Every structure is written in structure tokens, then in C-alpha cells.
Amino acid sequence: MQVLVTGGGGFLGQAIVRRLIARGDVVQSLQRSDSPELSQLGVKCLRGDISDLAVVEQAVARCELVFHVAAKAGVWGRYEDYHRANVTGTENVITACRSQGVRKLVYTSSPSVVFAGKDEAGIDESTPYPSKYLTHYPRTKAMAEQLVMRANSAELATVSLRPHLIWGPGDNHLVPRLIQRAQAGQLRQVGAGKNLVDATYIDNAADAHLLAADRLEAGSAASGRAYFISNDEPLPLWELINRLLACAGLPPVQRQISAQTAYLAGGFLERIWSLIGRQDEPRMTRFVALQLSTSHWFRLDAARRDLGYFPQVSVAEGLRRLAESMATSGSEKIRST
Image 1 (cartoon, helix red, strand yellow):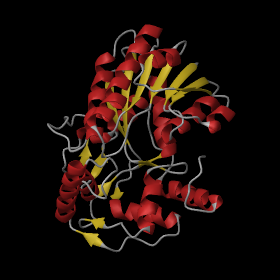
Image 2 (cartoon, one colour; image 1 turned 90 degrees about the horizontal axis):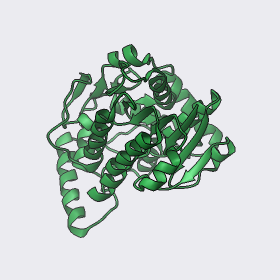
Image 3 (cartoon, one colour; image 1 turned 60 degrees about the horizontal axis):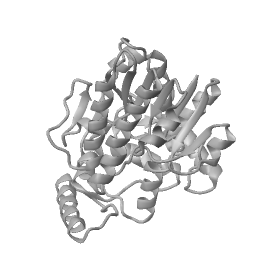
Image 4 (tube, helix red, strand yellow; image 1 turned 120 degrees about the vertical axis):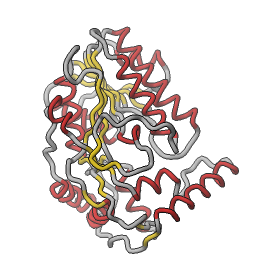
């Protein structure tokens, strides 16, 4: 099968690409920068921006399946930039799939599309979108997810996956950021530390995408739907963070602030950053304060039933692999697997 992965050079994108290559698919990737690792695997790497329809149509041509992974992540920045990457980019992918006769589209969404600032304890896909968002990323991802679900048809079967907090060897965002802040003495436990969070090991997230693609057909149970994806192992968030830090040989987080203090500090910094026009991310925002102090774990019944998704790598095994990868690299920098 000829397959396109948008954002194939990223953390999740690379994991998906490697699985596709291993099973014999012909893969090409659309990304904004070069990826020597993918080129060495024989992947055709196309450089371009998904906000450019002509570029996307060229990348989609002759493909039977598209994984749309590329997105602008983060909790700070201009709305226009998030909309262009996440909404316009997704519109272009859908348009290109239709014009080029692609039969299947698997979209990488996020559980944050339904985050309303409160505990999410065992929620399922019936949870509605909130009436407002505290940051542009979940807002634009929700808009894109709805575009994908509405695009489902007899000609183009679509499905959206919501993997939560992907981590593991090759991570260039979550774990390195935790390490950097811990080393700078900037990490504080937010709240009482009892909030449960269910993160996703990278191999499980990639497996979910291939399972979804294999089960996806026009009129199938998965077509036109969204699914939560996680490790199905809710843990106290700060226990997980401390275990991740331990993989880098760092001590657990000792200092603590209340959830209310963190939220107020986040609101204050947001106002300052907006007034002076800073584009870098504040050390705290209201969204981050709420994410760090509330529970986020999900029922995976639908993913098990419709996609055949059962996490194959436990948190304990994932941590072992992560520690081994970091020890092999000889530093806190995590190499791609």
C-alpha cells in the first residue's frame, strides 16, 4: 500500500512510518524540515507546509491511505498560526484526499479537545466539546477533528484518534521539557498530587494508528468516529513525572504549590505576555495549571471494540526502555528509536 504520513519526521510520525515500512508499505512523508532518519529508511520525504493546498495535493497523489499527524502544538502563540496549521492544514488534507481518490484518512487528534478545566475521570467519547477553551491548540484541534468526522463518506472513510501524553524513547518534547525544567529548579508539584493521569507509550500510540487504518472502511464501525487512546493505566500524575525524571537520574519533585496559586499565576503571566507581545511560552498558564492539577483518564471500551486496541507495552516496561535509551545516549537527550 502507498501511504502518506504528514508530520512523518516528528515523534509519533516516525513511529508510525517505521511500522509501515516494517510491514512492507511504500511510505512518503510531508514535513517542514529534512529528516535524514526517514530518508535512510527509504521514505520519500517531501518538504512543505500543509497550509499550502498545492503542496498537500502533490504529497497525497497516488496514495491509498493518509495519516494526518502534522500539527502545531503548544499552549501559547497567535491564533492565526494555530488555525493555519491545524484547521486550514486539515481542510487541505481532506480536499486533497477527495481530489486524489484516497480511500482512508486517519487523523491524530487530542483528548484536550474535550477538556473543560475539570477532572476527567473515566470519561468516554460521549463527552461533549466545551463551550470555551483556554488556549488555541485544543480549540483548533477540536475544529479540525470535527472537519475530519464530517468528511467521512462512502468515498473517503475517516477516523480520529486522541492519544494522551505520548512519551518514550525518541520523545523530543514532553520528557526533555520535564528534564530541562527539573535541572533548572523550575518544577513544582501543582495541587495535592492525587490526580490520576493515563499517558500513552509511543509504541502503543503508533499501534493504535495502524489498527485504526486496518479496521477503517466505508461504513465500518470506526468510520466517522473519534477514539481515546492511552495506556489504560491511570497513575498519580506526579508519580509518573517522578518516574520519568528517574530515568534521567534526577531526583523527584519536592516543592509544591496549590492549584489555585498556579492558576492565578498563569493568568497573571498570560496578561503580561499579551501586553508586551511575547511569543515564547510563559512558565505557567491557566491551561497548564489545570492540566497539572486535574485527572485525565479515559474508558477505552470503544477503541477495544472497534479498533482491536489493547496496549502492548506497560508503563513499567516503557520506563525501562526509556531509561535504557537515555543511558545509551550518554545524556538527557533521547535518541530516536
